[in-house]
Image (cartoon, rainbow, N blue to C red; front, side, top):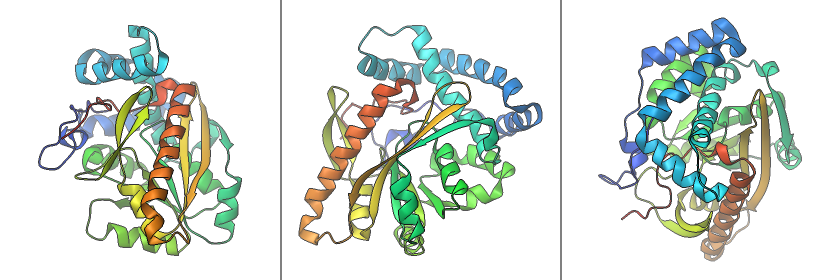
Amino acid sequence: MSEPAPPQQIDGKPAWMQHKERGSFFLLKLMSRISLLFGRRLSRFVVYGIALYFLLAAPTARKASRSYLERVLQRPITWSDLYRHILTFASTIHDRFYLLNRQTELFDIQVFGAEPIDQTQGTGQGLLLFGAHMGSFEVLLTHGRSHHHNSCIAMYPENARQLNRALAAINPQAITRIIALGQMDSMLTIHHKLETGAMVGVLADRAAGLDQYLSLPFLGAPARFPTGPFRMAAMLGYPVYFMTGLYGGGNRYEVHFEPLADFSGIHRNQRDQVVRETLEKYVAALERHCKASPYNWFNFFDFWESTP
């Protein structure tokens, strides 16, 4: 887990990429060994302690958590709310060890809205899945594996190097399915994957550098969202779906898919309008799921503060 810094940009990079990870590779590796050795039920006691530590030792994340929870819950926030928020985050990280180790029998996973995706994959057509730093990305991949879909993740690896090293020690194949964004050949790699019928997942609520933003209402106040992922989708011309895997406590998860847009056949002079409309639908879906599962939002910085 890491405590993100405020949102000012430095050298063209947003603050969430400026903050170094808390913890060490040794501790993450130790946690993975404890998790797999003692099982999920026993090792969860360690997760409660880790969440308490970060609640007390990460004031920036605690402040951002309070700001977000006040917006989504519309009431005064207690220390119990803050702890539950961080515990939910810690729980999804803990569950990564089991989901990447393909121990899905440990979880009660309900899937909603997957029929159009299964049908599209059945025809061999690629598609884009746009998510956010909300819930568990790994639990989303379980649906693709269970239906033998060709899936991969496009992500910025800068702020998760230690965690990726720990997870690679569990399942090296999981790391090989990650497309590193921010590289010169990133777009070509994504295009190739889509052409071969893959589902490519992208967390579209953050940018990795200078980007074009749209300010849209989100939980009662304007927030700036990057348009880069949506302009990429318009250029590539593939269907786009919203996705989220929400943690419901215990061993329960809900996986949701919703159609956002089909960029195939969109003319160039229509792209800007369709990009805006699709981003508005994406933000509306984010807000709806935040209100339904408020402790699953994991952007621990001031998401609403304007950046230069």
